[in-house]
Length: 117
Image (cartoon, rainbow, N blue to C red; front, top):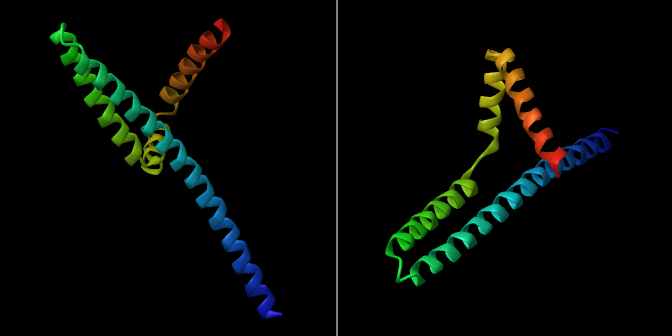
């Protein structure tokens, strides 16, 4: 009977690990997808900026935007949501009233944006 219990415990642990890793893998896939899109956009902007010989000022702004997007792509790729979530929870515990006001304001803005569409 003990063997069956240990097998069942290991099966439960494996199921929990696969569910947790599935969430992590899904989040990682979304992060990588967003980072790839940002990198692609940065490449297109950089190419367009390099082609604009007649307007050197615009080319400079385009190259700067391209660099910023590449930096943002790397930030998104390296972002870890667990420490950010811990900071948000700590903020909510320290100032629940302010947190409710922020959440209400965000809800009103999102509601107004979605209502117009």
